[in-house]
Image (tube, one colour):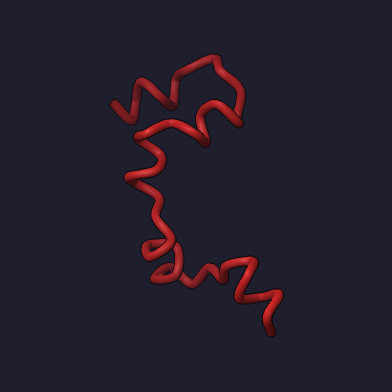
Length: 44
C-alpha cells in the first residue's frame, strides 16, 4: 500500500493526508531519529 501511495499523481498535500503516511511516519519515530518538533523548537 505504501508503494501505491508513493506512485500516485496526487499532490503533496493529498499524500500528506493519506492514511498510510499517518501510520508510518509518527512523531515518536521522528523524535527517535533526531528531528525536533516545531512547537518544541518555538518553546525554546
